[in-house]
Length: 385
Image 1 (cartoon, rainbow, N blue to C red):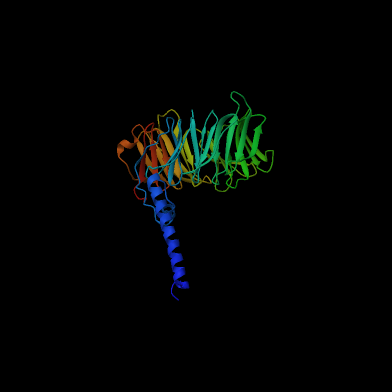
Image 2 (image 1 turned 60 degrees about the horizontal axis):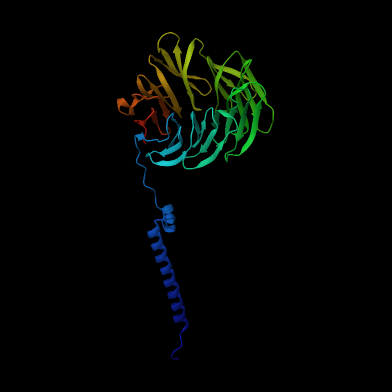
């Protein structure tokens, strides 16, 4: 019949109308995107499937976070804290994160890609990853120290100004406070969390001497404690076995889960110039009393077993280690060693160390050499970037 639309033609006309409307909508959307400069859904969608261009690795970082800068390794990025806040740059020197705030005495601690920056003697705290702020807060009392474990849980030690009262607060990986310890006597120097998030170790100074206490997070009171009468413990660190390594002015002590201490290395008669421990090995700089800068570098396994030693006759200003590598900054220049203190050649001009004040061993075999204005990367030659 003339004038009658067949079903097939009717469907085709309907589909054509729908396609025309969709095309018009897409054109309008693209026009809006071009005018406003906004990122489109399509670019975001296809961005997931397209591979990112490789980062062109730089040999110098430009951090803009004020004075008193300190640095931390975030695996594939570097974090810095200073008087004007925190900043993270990738290996190409591109900014991944910045949070501007004021600190007087900035400090930073990082593990497994997450960092905590804090203001010693003040109250500001920031916990962050390479591209995300996890927690932002101010403590009720002045900060003494802070640390973060490999699961992103962290603890902050605080104390009343001029007083003897001090507190440790434990936070989970979301930044929620989950546990608190208050000392009735003694003064907290530092605190660390076990890798399994179950135990808090507190180093405090008492009238009797240094004291190390273990707290189960499920209990209110100290589980076990070790007191070293008349001895000064400088630092406490967790080993891979879950024990605690205590660094004193004359020895290294392993404290087991029962609170029993075992002296694994004795260096009385030497002055401890510096140390670094990363779970794989321990490096000590031991100096001879009254003989200029004469001394030795010593490396030990995480259980205290002797690895190697070499003589030094120069001032060492900074040491840092990651995995099986040790970076040393001295008046004699920069040195990168393995655990056996075999020296590794690196790519860097001699002037890199001029005026440098610190060195940070980075993941992948590179080291960051820093001063008040620059942060220069040196790389072990046999390690691919």
